[in-house]
Length: 247
Ligand SMILES: C[S@@+](CC[C@H](N)C(=O)[O-])C[C@H]1O[C@@H](n2cnc3c(N)ncnc32)[C@H](O)[C@@H]1O
Image 1: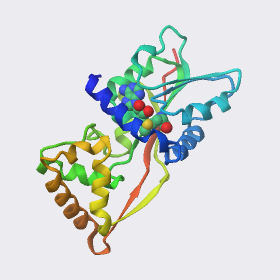
Image 2: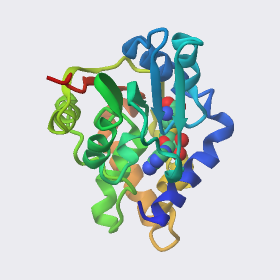
Image 3: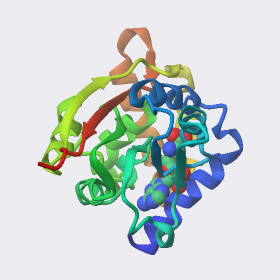
């Protein structure tokens, strides 16, 4: 991964770290544990573990006879030479990877035969500021700093896992872990908040900022229609897939 991409990702989460555990990610971590069902004695690898929300809950489930390894951006400590893991989780991070297909193929080699991978991506277009910024990006000549173009529906995630040689057990749309109501009167403020974060900072570049804000408010009004309201939901496509057992 290019250094600039690593720095970009680190800047997003450094900025969010203080409030991170109070966000919808706690509820998402609970959903991971319900879906993955870590068992006593299992070995778990939690990729892109962040503050460890999934890792810590998994640790409670696997108990003292199992173990959990959590890894975030730190390429030098990836596991090698072990017998593999019973369960790998990667929560709320797949879409940030420059080549998710290659990543999943790689992770598959870290699973025991029969071991399972649980991962997710945000459902298409559920995040309001991100959706609107993507829709005005061509006019502004900028783009989102990660590639979500491969995510169309649940099937996109299933296809990715299947093409890496995994048996896809289930892919589903989760409940919404957080809902936010955006009103047209607050659209300018929503734009300012979005571009003040590293994630969308490129839309706040002085050369395009005013035009970006104008287009943002215009698109917001168009989407909201007479109600003047847009609802933002934290919903994911979540999948469970298994490495086929050895024959
Ligand atoms: C939204 S957070 C999710 C954290 C955690 N999985 C959770 O559910 O709370 C995304 C995490 O992915 C990490 N990340 C992004 N790209 C990564 C990469 N290439 N390698 C390792 N970690 C990465 C970020 O540093 C960040 O901690």
